[in-house]
Amino acid sequence: MCRSIKRLREGAIPAGQAEIHEAAVQYVRKVSGFSRPARHNEAAFDTAVAEVSAATARLLDTLEIRGAR
Image (cartoon, rainbow, N blue to C red; front, side):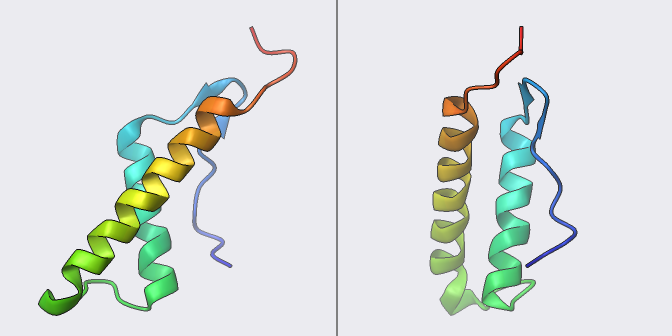
């Protein structure tokens, strides 16, 4: 879908919260079609970013990376 979204895990080292948040913003921008939401859409946009960030953090926290130290 979006080739410019960067990988958030290198080996056993997951990305930090700032990187996760920025990736979530980029994803929501791409899906919504808005680079900046109008004032009446800000709450929906911010909620989506928070939910994507949380889901991404959970995913990275629960992945089992074999061979990692």
